[in-house]
Length: 141
Image (cartoon, rainbow, N blue to C red; front, side, top):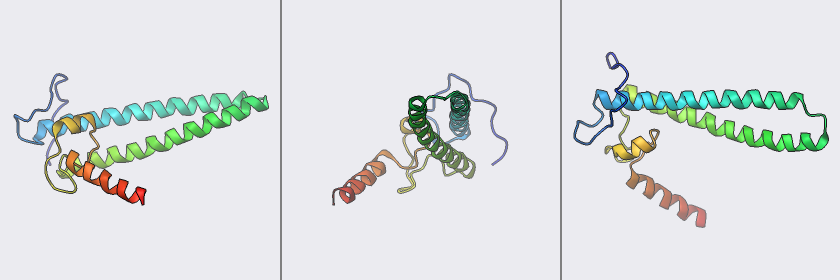
């Protein structure tokens, strides 16, 4: 794939006026994904430190029960973070192999607006809506 571009200009916004997924757009999304991943990792380290601090200072049973509830909420949040990081890593791999930004179902480009809002998207809006309608039908059975 060759050398990556330097950091993209902070004011750059991908536009439909340029070739879809040109090197500048790919680098823009790569940077966006890496920043997002770093934020999640930083956040989860803070969560872990807080959990450890709390568990050291819990003599009272009521405090401990409340702490267990907090802990289970934190663990669910951590699980979501882990899944999100896995999706981010997968998106970064798609950037490397050139398949990023294209719908897994139709092969059509995913809109830049959608990718900007949800950089881990693998389906176009239309394919996502079809997918959700199919899931709803199965759930309602």
